Amino acid sequence: MFDAAPALLLIAALVDGVVLYSFQVGRRVHQRRINERLQESAHLYGLVRITLAQRRAA
Image 1: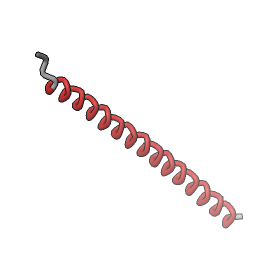
Image 2 (image 1 turned 60 degrees about the vertical axis):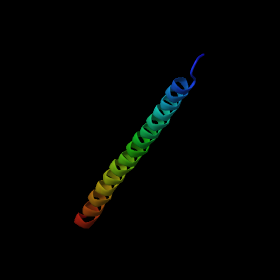
Image 3 (image 1 turned 60 degrees about the horizontal axis):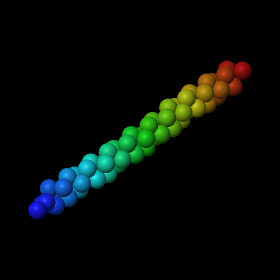
Image 4 (image 1 turned 30 degrees about the vertical axis):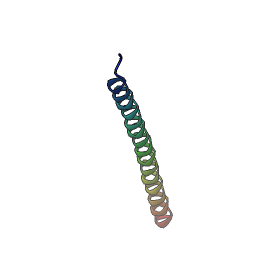
């Protein structure tokens, strides 16, 4: 007779792997969005500093 325990363990391991991989992909996406926002903020900060320096010089 067929023993179901190894098959169930294999399915559980595959499901666990898929869940962990999806968490990892989600973290990468979230981190990429944070990095993009930080770069955008740094760029805007630089633009504001340049604008203020130009106004002070005028």
